[in-house]
Amino acid sequence: MRASVRLDRLPPYLFAELERKIEEKRRAGVDVISLGIGDPDTPTPAAVVDALAAAARDPATHRYPTNRGRSEFRAAVADFYRWRFGVELDPESEIVPALGAKECIFNLNLAFLDADTLALAADPGYPVYTGGPLLAGAEAHPLPLVPELGFVPDLDAVPAEIARRARLLYLNYPNNPTGAVAPAGFFERVVEFAREHELLVVHDASYTELCFDGYEAPSFLATPGARDVGVEVFSLSKGWNMTGWRVAAIVGNRDAVATYWKLKTNIDSGMFEAVQLAAVTALGELREFPRQMSELYQRRRDLVCDALERIGVAVERPRATIYVWAPVPDGFADAASWCEHVLERAGVVVSPGGAYGAAGEGFFRISLTVPDERLLEAVERMRESLG
Ligand SMILES: *Cc1c(COP(=O)(O)O)cnc(C)c1O
Image (cartoon, rainbow, N blue to C red; front, top):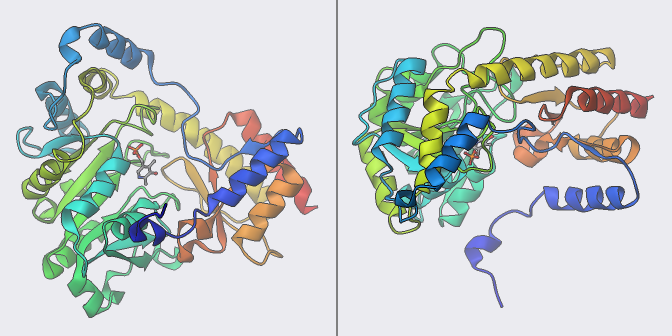
């Protein structure tokens, strides 16, 4: 048996070795605290679960859905975008459901890339921005996100030859893993760049609903001209504690949405209609729910940042997301060796920045998706391991 060359081109899974070590520690009786993965620890709101249960009891939801989605779902997304972002969307042509942002982002590569083309992808960034283009038989070109520039890419630094071959540009604000938010004027520059190079902007809006200190993340589509050059992938996973449900939507440029839809009709058969109806409840009746979650994460952010400062790790307090992106303490060769030290000496799992791309080296990511007391204990153990 032989895997495809396409699959072989993917870099080795950086967390595989770490997972093996965690398993080994747990078996040896170590109480491992994992701050590795970003997966909300609190449940989906009960009203959403109830809506699912009621819809699942109706046999009308048991048949094949369509890839266009139910009209209630598209209307709920449009209403939410108007209320939250002041963005008007046409439910008929500018909204299609996606089985999670991950599915959507991966499939956009198949829909838009050919052999000699590439996707510009934030580095550090969500792994699908780089793995997806490779699996589509194309390439990914990293755009470094560095603290000096506020973790936004320097679009002027993209070589002309690379820009010429680029068909997609992946962006994500509020940003995973850096926790950065888009500075004023940045999205305007993105629209200009996309026009100049005739590429499709894909804005991954997985964290727009989890913001702190009064900050409210905008939709990329609220930027003048954005709809001419871009789409946004909006996910309920993080904001409504629905990672297991696989609910997202692609919204924006109608040609791009139609192209995605055309591809999808050849790949899957849409989202279970009962899940679509549960999402209608989340986007309609539970609009304020992510704000309550934001309060929880803001409190945890402060717990972690205060504790890190006490042990001499200077962190920038993020204004959004569920992550703290912190510099590796002095005395460690790289992020991987620090993360290994923390696992060995403290039984705590944090992710090495280099796992998200070369520009992430020198940083590590802490996920805020564990209960407060576990978070505090983890940072306390890190302190002891440094002593
Ligand atoms: C969690 C995450 C996703 C995945 O979202 P799903 O809708 O659950 O597939 C996509 N992008 C980023 C940046 C994420 O952190």
